[in-house]
Each structure stands twice: as C-alpha cells, then as structure tokens.
Length: 201
Image 1 (cartoon, one colour):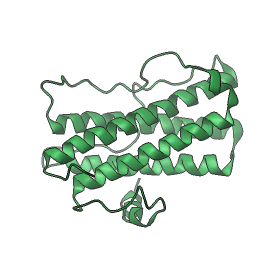
Image 2 (image 1 turned 90 degrees about the vertical axis):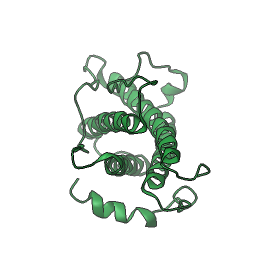
Image 3 (image 1 turned 30 degrees about the vertical axis):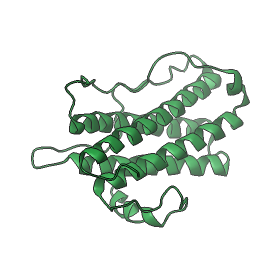
Image 4 (image 1 turned 45 degrees about the vertical axis):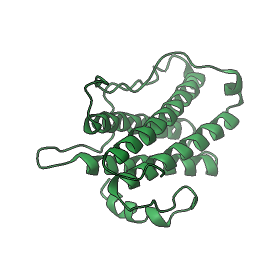
C-alpha cells in the first residue's frame, strides 16, 4: 500500500479514456465517483471473463446472501458521511475477499490467462485507489480510517467442495465486488451532490 499515492497520481494517464475522462469541476468527491464508476465497469468485465472461462456458470445460480456485511446504518438517521463510512468498511471487506481469491488461485493454478490476470490486478488497484479516495473524504483531526484489507467477517471457502467449490466461491466474490462497486458509485454520487457537486457527472 506504500506506493498507492504514487499510483493514484498515474490514474489520469491510464487507458479507458471514455470512462476515465476528467469530471466537470475537479472536486475530491467527483474524483471518487469517477473511480467508483470505473471500478464497477472493470468488475463487470472481470465477472464476464470469469463466466466465459468457467462455462458451467452459465447455468449456475449461487445460493446465500451477501458475503460482505458492514454495520448497518438506519437509513432515516444516516448522514452522507455515515453512508460513505459504511461504504468504506464494505470496500475493505471486498479487498480482503479479493486478496483471498488472488492467493487461493495462485496456490491452485499459478498464473492463468493473461487477460484474466491483468484484469484481476486492475480491479485490485482500482479498489485500493477508491479506498484512499473515500478515506480522504472522511478523515479529519478526530477520524482515522484504515485502507488495508479487512478479513474479519468475510466468508472463506471451507475446502469441502474441492476445486469446484473454490470456483463457485470465486464467482460469488466477483458478484459481490460488482454489487459493492455499483453501490459505491451510487452512494458517492449522492454524497457528491450533497457537497454541491454537479448532478450530471
């Protein structure tokens, strides 16, 4: 994580110009929305690539609820800051799950197809950048937020299902990442408008 600040400075020069184009009014909240939307796009690509790689998933519907469960904030009582703080906690759990996927796939199969490996790493870096951005939106003299992976409370494969179980678990993780990236884009856009940002990002 030590080099993330330098990586974030290179964010503006990366590819996908249509999705990564400058926002009207270079605000901190607007930048967070941009990163979240790009993360959602890349999570969708990764999910589709994994489904193409594991063809059995075309007819498979995973059971179970959400894998990531941050502490709930009552909707009627939640401020924008509280919603973003809850989102930040969820994204840390997502990063913990993604790190577990990277580790377990490396242990079982080593390096896989180049496109899949590259996209996994892109999603990881984008998620790390988004955590830095949400931390920047919330941190103050009395607030310090972690940006490291949170493995507490995240579901791990039990090993009983063998390689098939690992593939199903990985699929569920990718679905979870896609869900929370979408939630991040929506939550941060609302927060951006609350801070006086342009609505038509």
